[in-house]
Length: 107
Image (cartoon, rainbow, N blue to C red; front, side, top):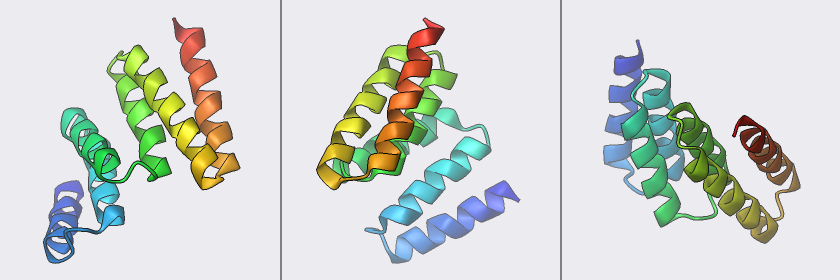
């Protein structure tokens, strides 16, 4: 099912290459399938193209943490929290800061 869904998302992205939601959905589908490195690469690329895509920071931090890349996870949290100040997304900022605090407890 997951590979079928991924194929559908990629076909949709081919028709709409600038669609940030589809890019994000592909990364999440890869995460679900256990394809961590491609998911990380896709989220990093999405954030390079659109630094204000707040959900990507959280997912990227989680993936980094799962890979024991805690410094990168913390950096993703901090960068996302800063972007939340720009976009005014206080809920996402709280979630990112809570994840950051949890990551600091893991060290």
